Length: 272
Image (cartoon, rainbow, N blue to C red; front, side, top):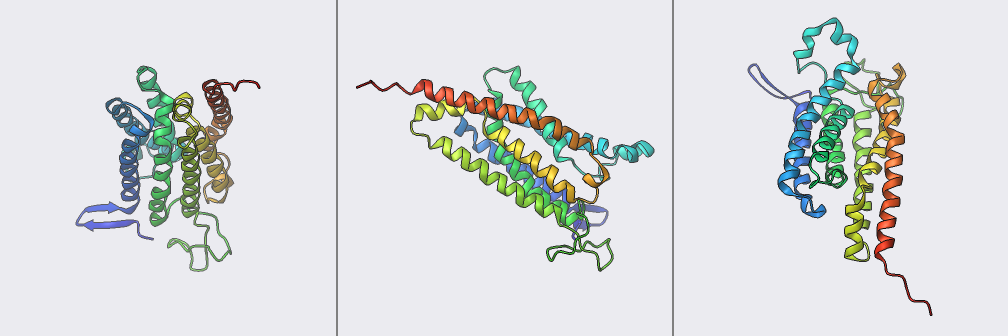
């Protein structure tokens, strides 16, 4: 593992934070390039995404505190030590989602669901790249395994191999990204431009689908983590379970709305 990328004197550059910040930066640049695709206002969208970015970082730390509440309760000074602990993906999603919703709700010129579809693929990309920071840092490790694809982590005895759950997360995120881009490609290549614009502007399909797949991925792979489901459901798991039926309902309503939008725009054929 390579937890430290660069160290100059007392200044240390951690591989974990380098990967995650690189992933977040690339995701924001990609999101900006997707504004025109969904016809959102560039200035308003940048403002919302900027605030959502800070909310994402805050949410990621808050969920980290909640996940390891006992440790921070026993040593409150650790709350101000940002080098202690990590970032929570679920917390990042929750913080960014809530702030973006509130800002879009107050700004009718920026449809929330359309903005969600703009950032959904870049958000999944963030996890695909950022999880390699977890791998090189040696955190989020899996349970011991005898399979040939097991990985040895430095803090373990030489004979212990573990599931590389960080890589599982990355590969699964890439698979989700391919699915989302495939669905988006189908929508963009719809028969008529009018129907395509109605499907893009009617209701979000990409976002709820991505959230459903993400929840399934986390609840599945977390079962292989050393500090995952084996220790019982954590705060993030309860959030995922509570949100899952709402995500399924969101997707169902969006599909119905899009079918209705397309059918109403298609002129009925004259009967012979």
